[in-house]
Image (cartoon, rainbow, N blue to C red):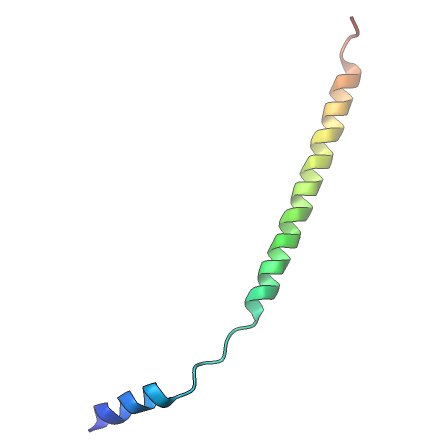
Length: 58
């Protein structure tokens, strides 16, 4: 009988509350990734411009 009560309780109980932090955490990760990519592009561009400027001209 106890098992029946447990089964009915599980089937009738409301679903657990959803964790709403997932979207904000994903958004934060996306913003951080975009920032890291932007910094990397700036550094690569600066190094490329510097090296190109220092190459001997023909």
